[in-house]
Image 1 (cartoon, rainbow, N blue to C red):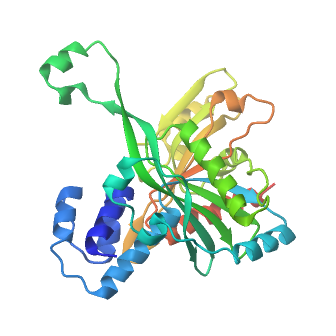
Image 2 (spheres, helix red, strand yellow):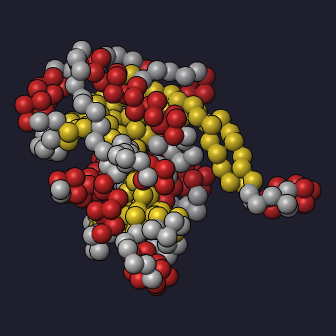
Image 3 (cartoon, rainbow, N blue to C red):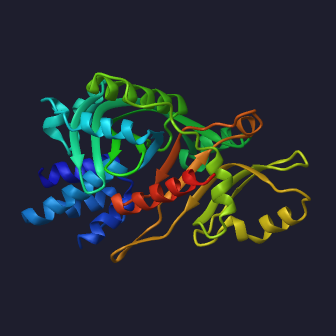
Length: 350
């Protein structure tokens, strides 16, 4: 992979704040944004060892970065059979396979939608990941500051509380089916860029599962695990990361949605939140939670964030259920594994 392919692929899929940490770990100069960083990057004369290390960092981000995840619990015999089946899979020649881990040229991504194709099989000490590449499109919703649109537009929009822009985004997705060497939970990890609609995400999860089972030529995964109970369990674990977002209901009939804007503080201990809880006679009922951990990766500090997005309607149902969790902010496998291990810890609790 050339330096041009490497930095173009990183720019296409890695959030800039995460890319800065990857480059910092390799002692590579960064700029104030992608344009200046890419320019400085291409001025370097890299040796093969550095390029190989950056390529491995990119592969880790493909496996773990900015994902929506579903867990699938199998018994011991089924998991062993699945591992054996995956061991027999080979990757066929394709555009995605030839380019991997680089993405296709921008013209190929913009040209047409390409269906998911097995592009690579990655294996490490923890498990095996089957990487399914595709080109995907979605309508991205973004908040727009009217003041950035000029005086006439700002004046015309001054009576609106918010302005939303919708744009068609095309990108190359790298979705992963992960089979661990140990344990009973397989995962499907779907690329989840910010702004992607829930319907597109649902379709991607379902199509990746179907394609994986077609590759194995058999039904392999059961229904995904219900993750809704983790919201209460993680919130109640007072020292489990920092809660930075919380949606909950109260027995007084009100619904609350709180966010912690100061990253080092936790909503569980925030004065306003505690005061409101103490005024109630019964516990709150969380249904939407984001929690962030601090993970040391050598000289780099990572803050991976887990989100479990339910809502009041789900919480009020007879059997509250959500199947996906979102993990953002991971630099690589180590900080993602920290989040996954904590999730599996709470899944094992009654």
